[in-house]
Image (cartoon, rainbow, N blue to C red):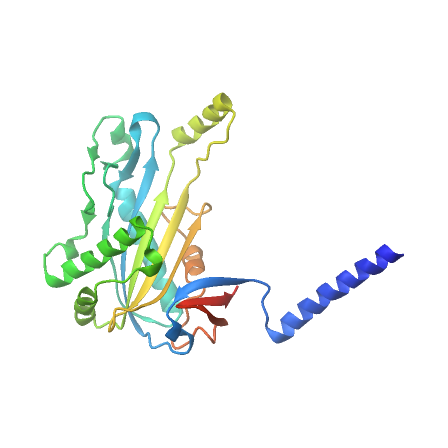
Length: 288
């Protein structure tokens, strides 16, 4: 009888918590996001210029190392950019441009092929430096705008490499050039990184596990990082990233992009209105 009474008390408490949450709007889970403190009570973003870049890494066994298949990198970058444009438009923003800039930034010592089968025919090239393996034609004119866009993306990739993306600050001079050229009040930098394993590599994993009696992880995965910058001041307003092992890295879904932008406010919506509160300096707690 005593046990039954305790169970009833626990059930009643759980029901009470659910009732309070449904009436008062509380959340049982929160997530911390990196955003400017001013975004809590102000959102003056209206016109966004989006610049995308990325790469798809095909890990290889033995002497293979990591391989970038150029068409895959290009396709993945363009696909996720198109999804981002749709999601931001749904949130009410005017997209003044959504341009792919390049692929394969900071890929030194990886291998480059035009097609995965070229690896068998030894039609591959070792990437020697940090420059992108491909830059889109509209950014190849060596003009001030082209240089500024490439500079800012290079700065972001350096910050990622040095593990300081949380404190990333773009060069204000480059941001001003982009602002003047596009008329955007906000600049979005989008970076896609994916891992894709061949069928042969996945089969090889099974044999390796049998031989070594240890778990070998061979799973496709994708990571998407988005950073929104005030085009007038160079201040980072909002940033978030998401990873998934359920998505096709070459063609991530619109739902995946929506997950990354879950806590990005709609046009004229503040983060306070979205249920976020201040947690630390430029770090907010948001109800999940």
